[in-house]
Image (cartoon, rainbow, N blue to C red):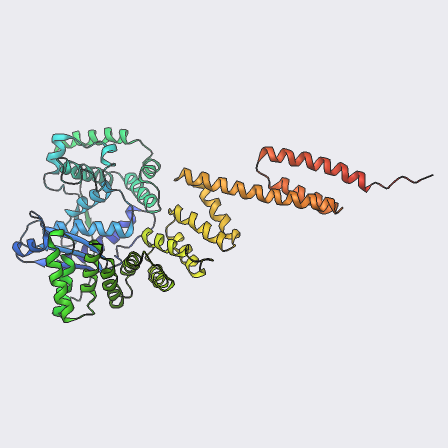
Amino acid sequence: QVRNLETFREILGVLSPDLQHHRILARPQLPAYVYLFRRSREFQTYAGLKGLEGLFAQHPDGTYISVDLGSDEGTQVIYHEYLHQFLATNFPGVPLWLNEGMATFFQTMTLDDLDVRLGKPPHAFLDILFQRGVMRLDRLMAVDHQSRDYQEGPDRGWFYASAWFLVDYLMTGEEPLRVKLGNYLDLVRSGRHPKDAFMESFQTLPTTLDEILADHLRKLAMRKTIATWIIQFKTLGPTLDLRYRQLPWAEAQGRLGLLATGPKKLRDLAIKHCETALLLDPASGPANLGMGLLALEANRFSEASASLEAACRAEPDNGEVHRLAALALLEANAANLDAPTLGTVRGHLLRCLQLGFSTPGTVKLLMDVARTYDPPAPGDIAALQAASRLLPGAFDLKWNLVDLHLRSGRRDLAEPLLEELAAQTVQPVLAASARARLLSWNQEDVERLRNRSRDAFNRKDYTLALADLEGAIALCQDPNLLKDLQEELARMKVLVDLRRQPAPRKK
């Protein structure tokens, strides 16, 4: 199973250039822990729900995948859930229909020596589609994690089948479709709203694609065959030097505790494992992390802070653990945020960004902390500037950076950011605010030059007076004000000419 998962990761790394312009390696930022249960009864102890063949959980220290080896579809669960991790790492922000559609497309991958087959329909999906047709794209694309169509509603299976069918059509169709899908992924990853990205990439309305998919399904029902990929590799499969070691009992208990921290009904089991691990090793990273997560969920922030600080000491290079430690410390001291506490929080958040963990949540926390300092600390601004480059679609971050630059007296750094915000079209309200701010600055600069011109004229420094007023005219963007300035310049030139003329001699 471990070798199959590594091979799957290698295949994703090869295929990813077909889905985008720039190669994205299928390398997760954190390790994956795979739990293989020989007996279904043992697996169900940690699954929390009946009827599952596998379970995928994302924890701060990595991905946890547990598989029931007694099930025929356990391998498909691994591929499906690993694909979710691949997308989360390489294409954050993909909508749910694409996330689930890609996962179900890849879950049926089969390996036969050096041949890889992709595109086999998941069990019963075609039966659902032949009975009900494809879900309308406006409804499909509106489904999120809170939607009844995604939860346990009667149309959940229809949603999954429709998402798979759309992705299958895009993946196994002609090459231009895959290019468009790659463009779509790039735009979403850069922060573009999925609906805008769809229109820009596919250049068609969802209703038009509805008709195309319906026709595709009708043809499929007639011939009962479906296109698949068969990819032949000259070499396949990483050269793994698999070594096995028996985990120390404290680490094993801590890892099992983290595995059980997801489902609420397994909370007592998670606490039991973590407490056992901490009795054996009080510095256990997994056990302290597990207890911190459980305390955070229960809003026991002081307990969470202590546990997560210990987890940070055990795993100093884990950005997500540092972020959670900062969050818990802020919540635990919300009534009395003194300078030492803010300094510790700030240290955790800066460490996050140093490690490349520039999630919107991390950036927002650091932004809130940076605002408490007057003037803002240069290190905070530098870290947030780096985060802004990594998150090009985070326009709220750029707006807040404008504020921090201004509080630091650096309008020269704030103005280019405002011009960038004014030019973007994703958030029209923010763009309008940026344009209004720039216009306000422009008028302030114009009035400053105008007043300086008048002062110079009164001092009889006519050269400077005319130059400043001409500079104000060149800078002005308000048509009404521009007209006033031009008329004032004309009057000033007349007066200057009169004053410069020599006085008549007395006879």
